[in-house]
Length: 197
Image (cartoon, rainbow, N blue to C red):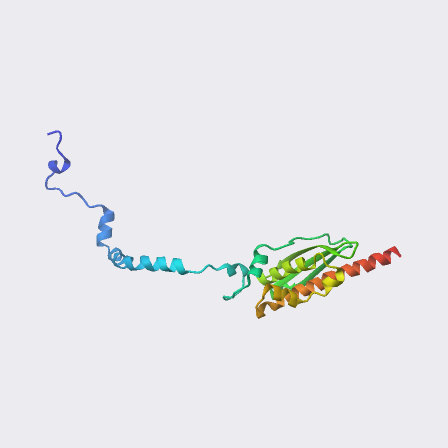
């Protein structure tokens, strides 16, 4: 008959089992995996659900340490990043820290004719606490007179950021940068005054 099937043509021939099926059924590793799979699936789901994120990895700090949200804010959204014209007589520039120690801060302030700091910029190489301290320092000095800005202490920065004790040195570095930038500005002003005389 023209409608006969292949099995009718060869009644004694068995249809070959797919190679993948043979492997799945007979391979010892596949059989072992099949036995433990029901246990692994819920375990993997549990690990994925409870595993906490690691936002501090971006800080490059060793170990697990909890930082205040203010540090995260200034680290993720740093204020006043950039540079000011170093040759401007109204701009004071500071470069403090050592790369070998891990933290370097470049901080600049621009002072208006009225003696008020009208702008500040920073660039920092270091951990998240150093970046946050630099960012906050620029915000703190803008709008202040040179003399008032010079009165800022590292404790003002560290208390706002709630820095852990091992990171207080970052706020100290920021204070040193403010002092050095103001000192550089005053030196330039003195030289400009002498040049006019």
